[in-house]
Image (cartoon, rainbow over all chains, first blue to last red; front, side):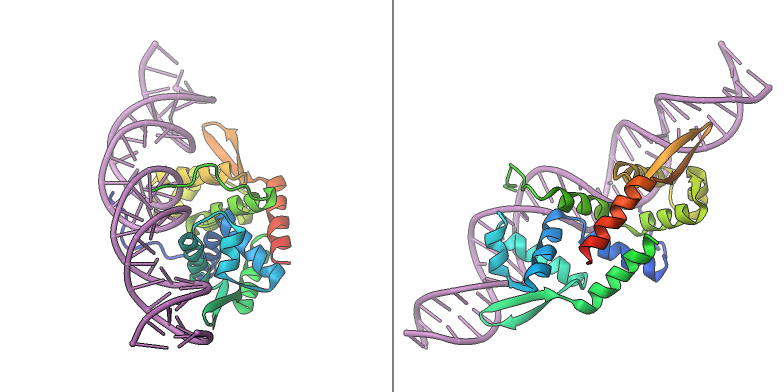
Length: 101
Length: 101
DNA sequence: AATACTAATCGTACATTTACGATAGTAAAT
DNA sequence: ATTTACTATCGTAAATGTACGATTAGTATT
């Protein structure tokens, strides 16, 4: 490829919205977030039982959601309790609201 | 890979939301949609002038947005006028609203 | 019929994503 | 100090995404 270096500069909100959207761009991650919303929190193991996916795959999806800032993990040894990151959740919500008018 | 065949079945709304989110998961496509919202409509050529991307790349992004149902193209020879697909736009808006409560 | 204009599609290269099993890490309990 | 329980990370394979230039296709206009 001859991918143009010096990547395009978009407005910060555009980049942020795209990042959130990308994180939401897989049904498993949507389902995980819905689950977190209803349960308010849960452990990795809970999800592994709910979804027919390998533990490592679930963990990978959780990592992406965490990187996007949509969830946060709290050490509850030997488990890890994942919750919605309320602050960023609100930001994402606002961005999508604004975007759709 | 040993990708598990027989893909997971999610609720229709979950799949739909993920599809929309995936289409929104790139800053260029967000920017294109914002442009369409402000102009209400535009031609492919307009976008090629606005973004420092090859014409084929823009066309590719438009195709994805069209496949996701977010935009629709109207033949206006020799150009093609793209507009937001209001019906699906409303559906997407509702899905995101519901998702974020 | 030939030309001009616009946009889609093709072919290609590299990056990223998604999935898996296997392994490593961490903290409590024995 | 070992063992146990849970989760992250590594390594890998295949699919998908993103970008480009070149080509093709479609629709007036000449």
